[in-house]
Image (cartoon, rainbow, N blue to C red; front, side, top):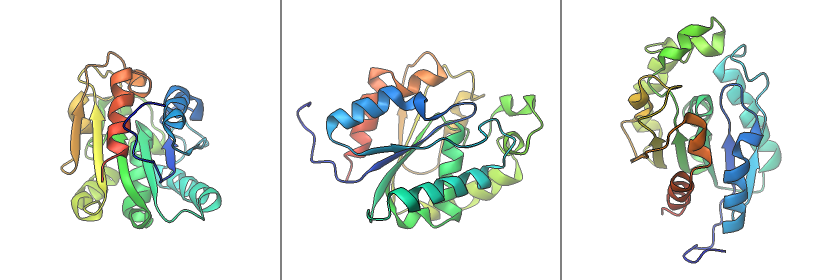
Length: 201
């Protein structure tokens, strides 16, 4: 175990993105477990955008209520589409009352041009200026003001276009020179940044 870990207490829930499953977090989960965290992840079904993002957020809520009923506080990490699923859980389903730290990784918080490629409900909600995003972005600061928020992104992202669409008007920004979208979950710099964010108090 690395030195400097301050007895992690909150379990960490990992939420994947479009066309992913929980295995996308294999490196991150292994890393965090080695640091002393309890790590949980789920598969959102379906993961291809045919389901609306609020419906996927309900899956997350059920998962948390079932598996973490004994934990008063949790830390939450959302990657890509999972960043929007987690935000809906936080902002519209009362998740902000349980989550102490929230990390958004390469999420299309202000939309992505790649979402114009498919007509599915969940994909449309990730388009710039969608009703879904405008609603969430309208009160993100007030909803998340009592949570330790970190948002991470890479300027080389070709899935989130433009790459800086992941910006949030709240919390701490972590900009990393990571070459590819999925590498934000396995790059050593990214893992170190996640660890640092989870130790914020």
